[in-house]
Length: 313
Ligand code: CP
Image 1 (cartoon, helix red, strand yellow):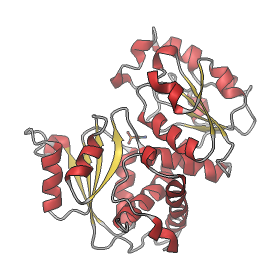
Image 2 (image 1 turned 30 degrees about the vertical axis):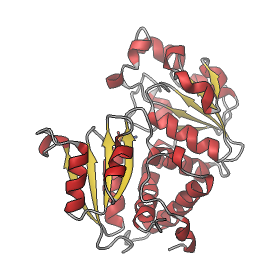
Image 3 (image 1 turned 45 degrees about the horizontal axis):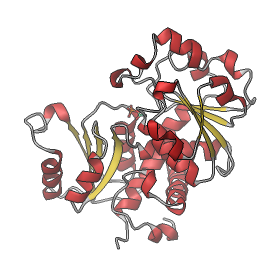
């Protein structure tokens, strides 16, 4: 593996807000090496042999949970999956107690998804083992931000100066926050676009351009990242109906005719087809949505590898 992994000193990955540009680039470069591993006939390396990763998910997930499991297995780690419904969380055990018990069970890395913003930070302070944030409330989804940026680097190249528009429910979106932190640190020019009520109060402090006009957001963009309307998190109450949202903000082939020919279309998934994006755009020539999913494995391998081998200060 790369010599410069010695530069990684953090036991946890909690958010892109807390990383330097160099640390983000180190994760992306390490992920590139692991993507090559995934293209081999034998898609496995012994980098985490003897380590154990616990996936602790308090919220549903398809892409993140499965790709963390695959990432750990491709690195030869042992993996356990803890579901809220079939564990002692159901009996009222606290997150901290669950984490301390996992540490007592000699787990090396806890990957946690939680409905409360800040839960992974709290857990990381309570245990000496590594904690990786797999999405917390409205706060951050750092590995999603990283895999989005990794995909942009792969499809377009240098992030510095790239025009990226993030479109949809910014207020409730941890994906938006991680993308904004990461893209800004790498020098991209970020625009956020949403109905007025779905722009967060702190938006002006985020160093982004703000618009409520989706055609304006698309017009000069090199890439758009279209967010899911979070039906479980009150996204839709900010708009009279899903149909009206689609009419004003939905990404359609018609709208993309006014965009750059090679505009890259991303979506973190799961997609609400016909709400934030039409099916033909999701499956169209500009879409890299499934590449994002594939890249998630390499990025999560890089994160697990780096936190497991951190030279802690
Ligand atoms: N993008 C994302 O976090 O998807 P899942 O909820 O399926 O993990």
